[in-house]
Amino acid sequence: MRNILQLLTLKTSRSLRVGFILSLAIMSSAMATDLDHEVVFHIKSQPLDSALLEFSRQANTPVAFAAKSIGTLSTPGISGRYVARAALGVLLCNSGLVFTKVGETITVVPSSKPLSPENCAVPAGPVPTN
Image (cartoon, rainbow, N blue to C red; front, side, top):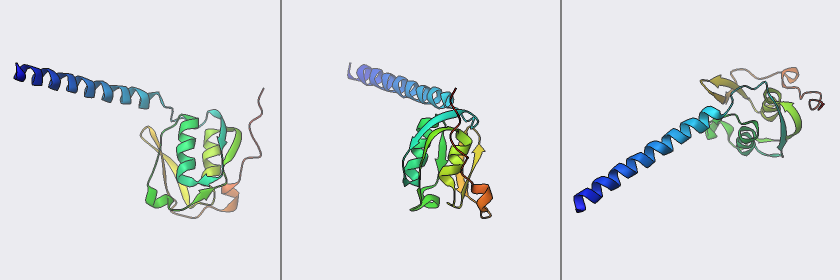
């Protein structure tokens, strides 16, 4: 009887693990990697790593970065309705970091060349709401 209970427990445990893995796959596939959609952002001035996590949540877009490359950088934040690509550019402005799409994830990496000020310009303002 004990062996049967252990076998049932093992099968149940495997089922739960498979279900958990499947739910993670469904959740991650539901996240968009399209940075051309508009989002109302409310990201306050804070450390850049926290701001990127908040951007990921608000834009429903997976963002990956190495904590080592972020270090102690901070961002002034962003508030208003912006195209996600522009908002992420604002958060990374003057950080020495850029973003790229790797598979289905937006990845933040060190820039191979410094951005000139005109390439790091903040959009004129939020996208007008109609």
